[in-house]
Amino acid sequence: MEAQETAELIEQSGHGGTSQNRSALTISILAMVLAIASLGGSNAMKEATQENILAANAYAFYQAKNIRQTTYKLAAADLELQMAREPNMNANAKAMFEKKLEDYKKTVERYESEPETKEGKKELMVRAKEHEAARDHAMRQDPWFDYAEGMLQIAIVLLSVSIVASMPALYWAGSVLGALGFLSTVNGYFLLF
Figure 1 (cartoon, rainbow, N blue to C red):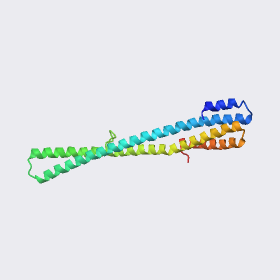
Figure 2 (cartoon, rainbow, N blue to C red):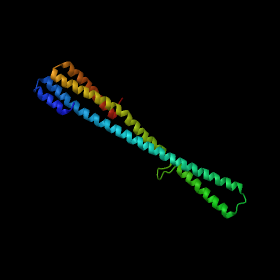
Figure 3 (cartoon, rainbow, N blue to C red):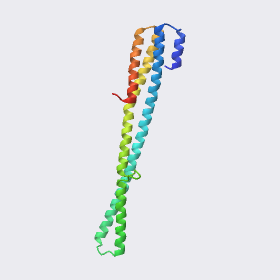
Figure 4 (spheres, rainbow, N blue to C red):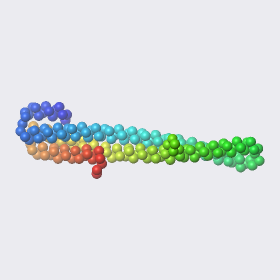
């Protein structure tokens, strides 16, 4: 139920007694909490999606580095085999082979860890795990916001009906459900339990 519909409902029933005013005030507070819960749920899902994409990107980059590193390892091993097969290789060619072998090994080491650019395999794995942790946190938050939204919407309906029907039982049921919705909203943000 929208806030405007609630205001119209209150106007239609007149200013009413204290129970109607109490219900109207409770509805207003719960509508505000509902808006906060809705915002939290939306943000949690956006964050979960974004962090999932970033984690997938980091893992893909890791795999690309791993493939390149393996290619250089194979090339280095091939050069070592060629040098072993031709022990009488001329000095100039042997120096070129050794230089290329050294370059390949440096590249293999650089792909393993690059603290300067944070794009080595070790750094990429750490980054991917951080994104996964952020995603998992947002995924734990989201259901609480969903529960809160559902309970708050039902509570607002029950409280609105309690105004029209003048039924205190509906007021108390709506209030209890609203309190549970409030607690779910708080837990959605802070994950207390």
